[in-house]
Length: 86
Image (tube, rainbow, N blue to C red; front, side, top):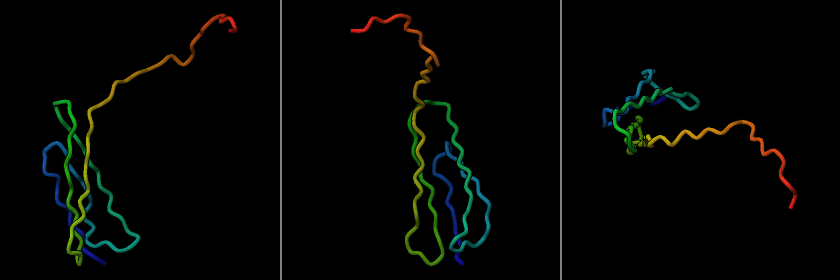
């Protein structure tokens, strides 16, 4: 069993919530809830640093929030009426 530590994202746009279970072993998991909020439209990036006991290098979980795309909606049925062949 190893202890695991999370470092919060560096920007205030991202927020990470998780339950501190103390130790993690093979087959166990930690559920993380990532939230993103902003007032300006754009592409945003951040990182969460995850350190585990006994590992010299931390793992970096990269977060990306991309600009929303257009919401294109089509009618479910298109009536072309009579179309001659050829």
